[in-house]
Image 1 (tube, rainbow, N blue to C red):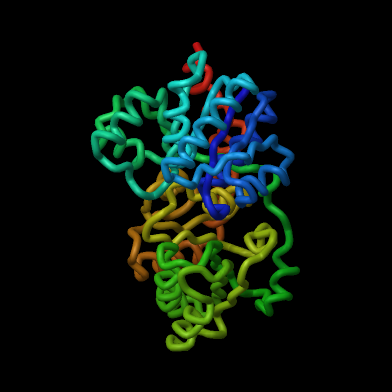
Image 2 (image 1 turned 30 degrees about the vertical axis):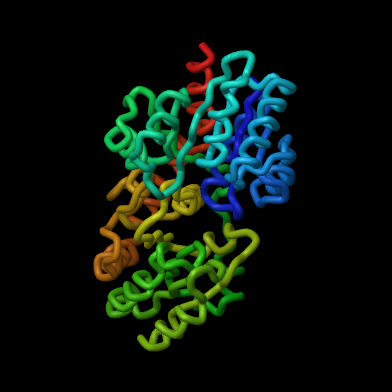
Length: 371
């Protein structure tokens, strides 16, 4: 198949990861994939780095009437020239442009809208017409988004399919770097490490993670808590002040952003996702799992679809530091359970969330539309 993937975001977020990793996986399966998006945008730069074919003479994030007309013309020309069989739009602006362009195609080219945005689709007549009449299939990244399309927009259930993201389970495989990073961060050899990876934003729940440490340290005072991520809507300095106020400085390490998170994750005895929102894709949970780590996470969006409570991790209510802390204590006090959960995590990624499985599920949707 000749597949056109449309992704326009101003940073390399989870939606961009979904689109670019899918493009790579489909290319590995022998399809010809072109990634189109705003010139010099992070997804396009990443696509080039991964040697994907790109088209960047289009400005999908611009929604004024003149630019929409320009983008429609460019897309029509691209689809005709490259004989595109399938268009998959990963954002609302590109979805609209592709839907308008369909009017001018000489042959029927199926249009798929993939939605991984944490915001639910707007329930209005225009949006319903766009998604029901002008779109051939909708792919959601978690069940709660699928239910929103069905219940709020009244899209037929058969038209909406849920496909969770995949991960490179060979790249993210168990590795023995614990002592290397432990020495670098002055972590005592006997300490257990609980860690979080993610940008420093209130939605990621870092403050609940910090408060959960109070419950853990009462029973396991040598536990080390590690926070890895770049400043965003809040800063590491702000979080350090909270840690200092709770007199837990010796038990916390702040790493900042690292180029390769695998070394940091290898240090974890437990990986944590403490988010209070977002996580409609939740790549980081899969990274923990793929590296054989047990996970403690909040019951938010895609997380319960990835973490099987009591099998490869523990799932707790969001915004509840006490429950998060007690779940951590349960695993920290039981080495055998940690090992069992870690093995189940790795097995589940291999059986359900590899890049090839991700591509196969999407490929099936494409082929059904072409048939």
